[in-house]
Length: 129
Image (tube, rainbow, N blue to C red):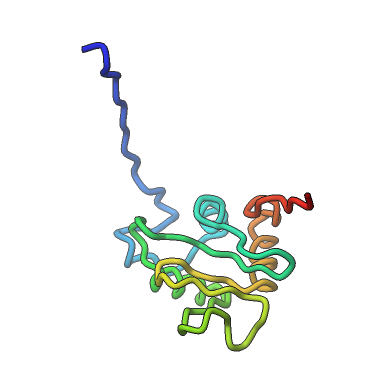
């Protein structure tokens, strides 16, 4: 069979410091875990006053669970209410899917700084052409 190739897979055991017995067992996000999460699923939406979208569709954690974990870390998130923009802020763009967690602009900048990431780590460069 010339059109086949080897497939390799491996599994990992969660690190004991994560205190992980399943996705609903996690109560706190450690800084390193939060950094990995933001790096893996974070996207900056908008130009000057955009917001951070954490897209966990297809992950074991739901948007509701992630919002709760972020709330435990005093990180503000907003949810879609049908009008497209956050009522309390012009610096946030909603997403229609409940599994896309939205962190408003200024809170997102603080979050990025707290985990050692910059805006360029989650945003596409602005093309002025």
